Length: 67
Image (cartoon, rainbow, N blue to C red):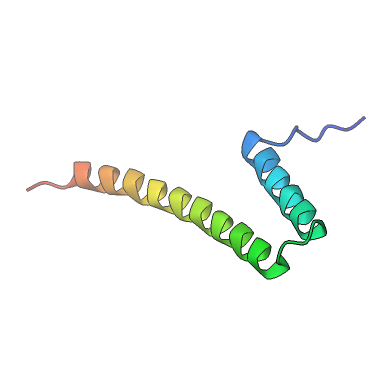
């Protein structure tokens, strides 16, 4: 029996974007442009996660400061 949890919505969306890029390349799109777009999308998502982490930590540190 497979006990692997189902993929998250984000993982599913990422897989769909990758498959769409492959279909676009199969239909004649520029492979470099498709790879670049996927890379930019990935980087944007990771930066948003990092910014959210910094905001959470900034709030926590800011609330511990005594002025």
